[in-house]
Image (cartoon, rainbow, N blue to C red; front, side, top):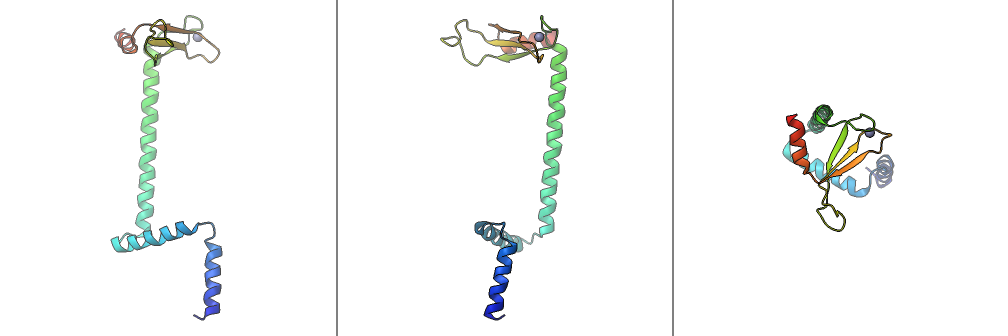
Length: 136
Ligand SMILES: [Zn+2]
Protein backbone atom coordinates (compact mmCIF):
# COMPACT_ATOMS: atom_id res chain seq x y z
CA UNK A 1 0.00 0.00 0.00
CA UNK A 2 1.48 3.31 -1.04
CA UNK A 3 1.71 6.22 1.40
CA UNK A 4 -1.18 8.17 -0.16
CA UNK A 5 -3.51 5.15 -0.12
CA UNK A 6 -2.51 4.35 3.45
CA UNK A 7 -3.22 7.90 4.54
CA UNK A 8 -6.59 7.78 2.83
CA UNK A 9 -7.43 4.49 4.58
CA UNK A 10 -6.39 5.88 7.99
CA UNK A 11 -8.65 8.89 7.42
CA UNK A 12 -11.51 6.59 6.36
CA UNK A 13 -11.14 4.50 9.52
CA UNK A 14 -10.85 7.63 11.67
CA UNK A 15 -14.15 8.91 10.28
CA UNK A 16 -15.99 5.59 10.63
CA UNK A 17 -14.84 5.12 14.22
CA UNK A 18 -15.03 8.78 15.23
CA UNK A 19 -17.72 8.13 17.85
CA UNK A 20 -15.18 6.15 19.87
CA UNK A 21 -12.48 7.93 21.82
CA UNK A 22 -8.86 6.96 21.24
CA UNK A 23 -8.50 5.28 24.68
CA UNK A 24 -11.54 3.12 23.87
CA UNK A 25 -9.98 2.04 20.59
CA UNK A 26 -6.81 1.12 22.47
CA UNK A 27 -8.99 -0.83 24.91
CA UNK A 28 -10.54 -2.63 21.94
CA UNK A 29 -7.12 -3.72 20.73
CA UNK A 30 -6.19 -4.95 24.23
CA UNK A 31 -9.49 -6.83 24.48
CA UNK A 32 -9.13 -8.25 21.01
CA UNK A 33 -5.64 -9.53 21.85
CA UNK A 34 -6.94 -11.14 25.01
CA UNK A 35 -9.86 -12.81 23.21
CA UNK A 36 -7.49 -14.18 20.62
CA UNK A 37 -5.09 -15.45 23.28
CA UNK A 38 -7.91 -17.07 25.28
CA UNK A 39 -9.63 -18.38 22.17
CA UNK A 40 -12.92 -16.60 22.87
CA UNK A 41 -14.99 -15.52 19.88
CA UNK A 42 -16.98 -12.31 19.61
CA UNK A 43 -20.07 -14.49 19.22
CA UNK A 44 -19.36 -16.04 22.62
CA UNK A 45 -18.97 -12.58 24.14
CA UNK A 46 -22.36 -11.59 22.72
CA UNK A 47 -23.91 -14.76 24.15
CA UNK A 48 -22.24 -14.07 27.49
CA UNK A 49 -23.66 -10.54 27.54
CA UNK A 50 -27.14 -11.76 26.56
CA UNK A 51 -27.24 -14.44 29.23
CA UNK A 52 -25.98 -11.94 31.79
CA UNK A 53 -28.78 -9.52 30.83
CA UNK A 54 -31.35 -12.32 30.90
CA UNK A 55 -30.21 -13.34 34.36
CA UNK A 56 -30.38 -9.74 35.50
CA UNK A 57 -33.94 -9.49 34.16
CA UNK A 58 -34.94 -12.75 35.88
CA UNK A 59 -33.51 -11.45 39.16
CA UNK A 60 -35.36 -8.17 38.74
CA UNK A 61 -38.65 -10.01 38.14
CA UNK A 62 -38.05 -12.23 41.17
CA UNK A 63 -37.25 -9.17 43.25
CA UNK A 64 -40.40 -7.38 42.06
CA UNK A 65 -42.61 -10.39 42.72
CA UNK A 66 -41.06 -10.85 46.19
CA UNK A 67 -41.67 -7.18 46.97
CA UNK A 68 -45.23 -7.48 45.68
CA UNK A 69 -45.81 -10.50 47.95
CA UNK A 70 -44.43 -8.59 50.93
CA UNK A 71 -46.67 -5.63 50.13
CA UNK A 72 -49.73 -7.88 49.93
CA UNK A 73 -48.77 -9.58 53.20
CA UNK A 74 -48.26 -6.21 54.88
CA UNK A 75 -51.64 -5.01 53.64
CA UNK A 76 -53.20 -8.07 55.26
CA UNK A 77 -51.57 -7.70 58.68
CA UNK A 78 -51.25 -3.95 59.15
CA UNK A 79 -53.69 -1.66 60.92
CA UNK A 80 -56.11 0.54 59.00
CA UNK A 81 -55.88 4.31 59.10
CA UNK A 82 -58.40 5.65 61.66
CA UNK A 83 -59.09 8.60 59.35
CA UNK A 84 -59.47 7.08 55.90
CA UNK A 85 -59.30 3.31 56.31
CA UNK A 86 -56.26 2.79 54.06
CA UNK A 87 -53.47 0.48 55.29
CA UNK A 88 -50.91 2.15 57.56
CA UNK A 89 -47.19 1.96 56.90
CA UNK A 90 -44.75 1.47 59.75
CA UNK A 91 -41.15 2.64 59.91
CA UNK A 92 -38.51 2.61 62.63
CA UNK A 93 -37.41 6.00 63.96
CA UNK A 94 -33.75 6.51 63.09
CA UNK A 95 -32.47 8.50 66.06
CA UNK A 96 -32.56 7.45 69.69
CA UNK A 97 -33.91 9.51 72.61
CA UNK A 98 -32.26 12.92 72.74
CA UNK A 99 -32.58 16.48 71.50
CA UNK A 100 -34.07 15.42 68.15
CA UNK A 101 -36.26 12.75 69.73
CA UNK A 102 -37.43 14.13 73.10
CA UNK A 103 -39.96 11.39 73.83
CA UNK A 104 -37.78 8.50 72.70
CA UNK A 105 -40.04 7.47 69.85
CA UNK A 106 -39.00 4.22 68.26
CA UNK A 107 -41.55 3.71 65.49
CA UNK A 108 -43.67 5.77 63.21
CA UNK A 109 -47.05 4.97 61.65
CA UNK A 110 -48.10 6.83 58.53
CA UNK A 111 -51.06 6.50 56.23
CA UNK A 112 -50.45 5.00 52.78
CA UNK A 113 -53.36 7.00 51.38
CA UNK A 114 -52.24 9.66 48.94
CA UNK A 115 -54.56 12.38 50.27
CA UNK A 116 -54.32 11.49 53.95
CA UNK A 117 -51.80 13.05 56.31
CA UNK A 118 -52.43 10.78 59.30
CA UNK A 119 -49.29 9.85 61.22
CA UNK A 120 -48.50 8.70 64.73
CA UNK A 121 -45.25 8.19 66.62
CA UNK A 122 -44.90 5.47 69.22
CA UNK A 123 -42.29 4.46 71.78
CA UNK A 124 -42.81 0.79 70.93
CA UNK A 125 -40.04 -1.05 69.06
CA UNK A 126 -40.54 -1.56 65.34
CA UNK A 127 -39.73 -5.31 65.54
CA UNK A 128 -42.08 -5.80 68.50
CA UNK A 129 -44.99 -4.25 66.58
CA UNK A 130 -44.28 -6.33 63.48
CA UNK A 131 -44.21 -9.53 65.53
CA UNK A 132 -47.46 -8.61 67.21
CA UNK A 133 -49.10 -7.91 63.83
CA UNK A 134 -47.87 -11.27 62.48
CA UNK A 135 -49.43 -13.10 65.44
CA UNK A 136 -52.86 -11.50 65.06
ZN1 LIG B 1 -55.42 7.75 56.12
